[in-house]
Length: 187
Image (cartoon, rainbow, N blue to C red; front, side, top):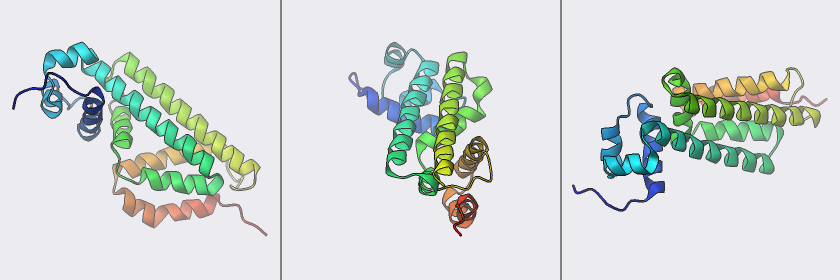
């Protein structure tokens, strides 16, 4: 199969997100990237400055998609409805969630720039979820039994679990129990 001289950068990145999400950073080699995307090595290096930078670009795009999704979801729902919709979305098998799972599990193998980006994104997500939970508690849409930061941390652990096992089965069987614990009981 002849290599394309012209390629769509967005298409290459999308394919690489799937590759890194499926195989992880370490197990995805340059030759695999070249084969999957159809671009040649020199184009890969001249356009993306190598595998490390390509991985960072993939992380940045996935992080922006996640931010956009969370912010849009928050505009549409709050409190328990937000938590439920967020967990239902994470239960879907999407490459961007697997990309971050892979990046977090291979964190020590990554360069400092990629580590810094992952750390910053994880911090943003934790702060965002904490603020959503805190607002839900303030408006009495979420139980005040636990600190908002602790609930946000629990949500992050649950989302990692959803990414590691049969997500839809876990969601269907156990997450409604979590939702009921967070619900504000009305007298």
